Amino acid sequence: MKKKIISKIEDAQNNLNIFKNSICISQIESAAKLCINSIKKGGKIIFCGNGGSASDSDHLSAELVGRYLKNRKPYASVSLASNLSTITAIANDFGYENVFSRQLEGIGNRQDILFAISTSGKSKNILKAIKSANNKKIKVIFLNSIQNKKKNKTINIDIKVPAKRVDRIQELHIFVGHLICEIIEKKIG
Image 1 (cartoon, rainbow, N blue to C red):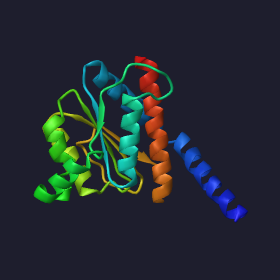
Image 2: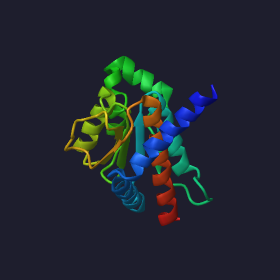
Image 3: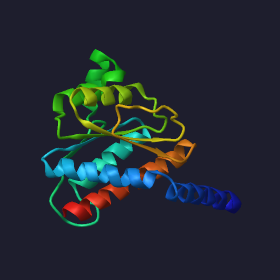
């Protein structure tokens, strides 16, 4: 069992080493700047994701509204994955593929950022949310993985983390999210 645990730690370390030398570094910096500009202009960061990515969506939004590393004023942020009544009502009346896009249509504004999270990059409801964001002139940060080979010209910043297993992708996603939260907190105060 010890060998298996060490092997998994080494696997995670390997992904971080690949990550360190990837284009993701400049994309993270650009994503943080985009979020900072949005917050300074009175916009909000709107997160969405399914399954574990829904939890990451809630988690990262909470880091911005609450606090990350220091006490400071709250930043405007919301997770579209957090209201079960809204999600189930939209899913029932309009289809699950519309659970995020319908919410975004209701609360999204031009100065906002959509921060979409998907391990596969193929979730229909995430792709529809991105389309809705484009229609409302909302900038999009798409956190996905190298498994998603598609290049989407409607995305402002496409962060494809260098992992293939879902659990390793999610580990890097929360790492990226935390990095962005830390940069925002340090730059805005």
